[in-house]
Length: 180
Image (spheres, rainbow, N blue to C red):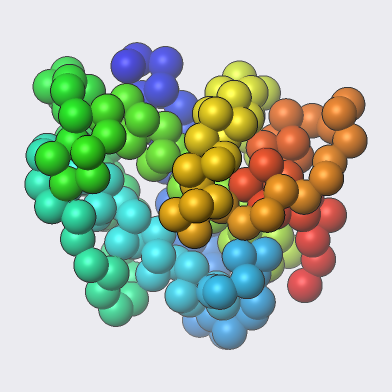
């Protein structure tokens, strides 16, 4: 729990900072996540933070709502829930997955979409090697299910010696060399 929670906090902080730096003039920009422009992707992150907060508390699978511009607040509420030991116990009622898997899904969402936003807006997005390696291992394990459920795209070939973050991105269907 503690290791993943530490990674979640780092990813949440980085992604939150990035989201607050993005101006409304950047909202229409395309992202590596082909279904979303910048504004829609921030909206998706808002939903994800609320969803993972709910699921950690045995709540429901919530529908996505319209953009509100409050991602930093939502992600803080999500982190507060994951800081409770009981949030890591058992299986989520709303999704039927072990809660430790949900925490890793939240981490995947924060890092992948943080990277998407950074790439779309010409900013950098640094991830600790330990976090990137954990994400790579999780993505490799979850790839078939992730693709089946539409969460991951087709794998993008990335050289074996590439950094763990690039290999993680390739596994989930992102091209690490993507440019707008």
